[in-house]
Length: 538
Image 1 (cartoon, rainbow, N blue to C red):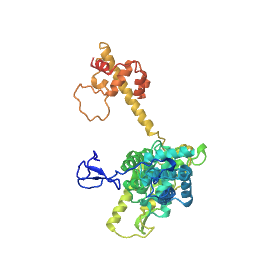
Image 2: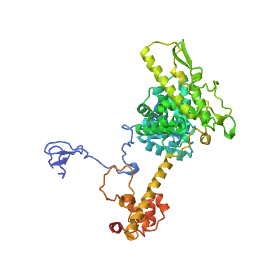
Image 3: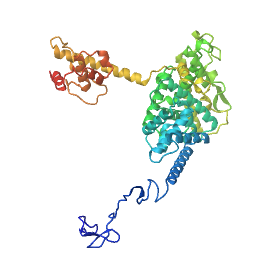
Image 4: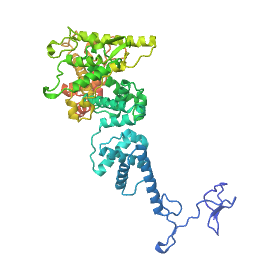
């Protein structure tokens, strides 16, 4: 019997079934058609049965083979991840146990399973207050940080676990030990750099530069800074790549660190000349001053640091100690301390009466300038002469810069309340608070300008005629657009502020900047956009 379908080969409609096999073939070309011999097996329990094929099995393989293969591949993936993350045997066992308990021993397959394993590994490490950056795990499992974060949240909710807070100090210590940029540094120098980095990290915590920020870029900025401070060849791009963070964010945190050190340096006699560009030349003095301030004891016991003079005495005195001699041969050796600090027949500084301190800040500034001149002279003379000097007899620049003591408590890990009690020469406010104050001030100026415009429109006779448009209208800072004379610069924010003022909204509420909330509260009273525009034209 002819079929209404066409042949797949010659497109002819002369398709007839074969009496023997039941397959449909073309009467014109003889080509057998595919999938035309399906017969439904209807017979209940006593009828013919087909082959039960499961997803993931090959041919007529059993379900047990598929499950065993899935479990084997999952455990192999977990072991591979644990090896790449450098987990110990006990930690790897904890991760495997957590994965098995959550999945009820079924494990899993697909793109979600590596993300799930990475989340379990992160939870196991954070549970024991050990550091494992989430960006490193996300880079290993091949997913986005936000996707991994959502999976971590699901794992934490499932096991009903409360993770401890992120420890940025542990993160810094782990980063400096595992970073390839510091692999060639000696063990003693690495310990010194670790103490310096912990000191700076906890200073940044005190200055609120880690509040509300991603911690790993802060760690990268401190790593680069102490690397430059100790003459270790390291770049911010390399460190950012090693820690799997954005270079631009690391550069912003690095700049913020330099700016805070510049603010601390203002108290020094030459502090007015310290800028972000030359802070690295003065960083040793600044950090030494911060270390001395942090060793101040509460309650007035111990050494007093109330006067800046005593701080500067120890700061400069270490740089010009009697142990440091400069010159170019053994016949010409001078004592730095006797040259600069011999005052009225005394070779030491008397701090018995701080009110009668004998060296003024002008003298200390002169001492510092002379010190820099002598360093430059020593370098230039050494380059011209080219003669080798015996150790201990010539000018030793490294000995003059032996500034780090490492005796401050901030060189060790402290609690947050202990960090906030320390004095490092600067008490800063959070950057977000500063930006909020600046934004509130700008909105306050916009409110004043809007009130003047409304008064000029509604009461033109009583308006102040001496105030022109350039003064009454708020103009944003650093505006690149050139406006014509007399042109009023009003944007959408000015229009919203005017609308809220017309409906008697309090100025304090407008200064907060929650425009959408205020518009929603007064939505029934607010005019339409066309009416507001007509009001502006009038």
